[in-house]
Amino acid sequence: MAAQTGAVLLLVGLLALATMASSNTEGAGDILYSQRQVWKDPNNVLTSWDPTLVNPCTWFHVTCNLDNSVTRVDLGNAGISGTLIPQLGQLKNLQYLELYGNNMSGPIPTTLGNLTRLVSLDLYDNHLTGVIPSSLGAVGTLRFLRLHGNKLAGSIPASLGRLTKLVELELQENMLSGTVPLEILSLVLVGDLTELNVAKNNLAGTVISSKQRVATVIHDTLKTTS
Image (cartoon, rainbow, N blue to C red; front, side, top):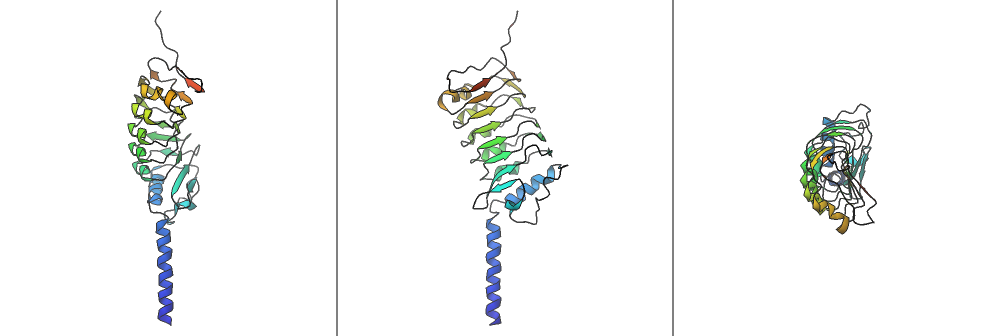
């Protein structure tokens, strides 16, 4: 009888471990804790990000679906500083990455192009540098791409023209150069784009709306010589 009881308890324990493991099949807890390690958090908003808890769905600012996969990270205006780690691109079910209004620095990881379920990428009002990764053009689910108010340089990737579900593209107040690719302008006609803002960069020319359903297209005035 004692042996049977011990076997039952062992089975229950194994099932509990299996359930805990399934809640972190994508390694989300490890990834997010690694991200926490490279951030400075003066306001202690990440104190609940405890590596001893297998399931990150219990952490503040993290949202999961019914399968315990991380779908949202909401840390806007949290006073956090530091860089973004490439491993964020392994959060395969992430839909919203909201890190706006912080002191983020360094480049935008190219691996974010692996987030094929991402709907909103809000990294605006930080201190991000480098280029806009062309890999973001692979995120066909993306509807909101807001990168304004950073120090991004280089050209605007033509690959963003593949984002036919994009509603808002806000790239203003950076150091972007070149021109706005025709592939992106075509989203006015064939996509869902309702706002395109590229003002206050080093871009040549202007952006012209040719369809009234576009609510706002904001650009710098074309410079002329007298």
